[in-house]
Image 1 (cartoon, one colour):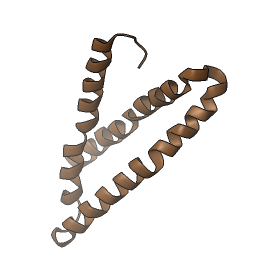
Image 2: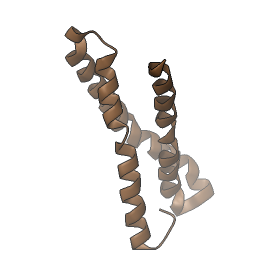
Image 3: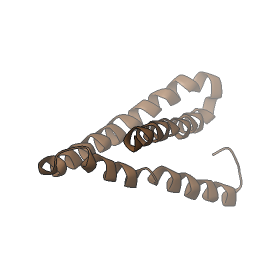
Length: 106
């Protein structure tokens, strides 16, 4: 994203994709454990629907808007900067997952 090296870009892409997928397992394990047994399928379906609706429905327009707002400051690099914001914001759910982990342990 911020480099001209293809090797470094691909390495960072693989690292980012791997790290962003690490939360999937704990979430899919935690959701059924906090709802009654007869509602687990509905809870997982609702989670999958909402996660995809928010991620696919709001993600591209939101970061397109951020790119538009950054265009006066960064010019042609505004989209790159908005995707960097997206990468940085992906740590926010991780913080919440770690906080929830402490809550479930007690």
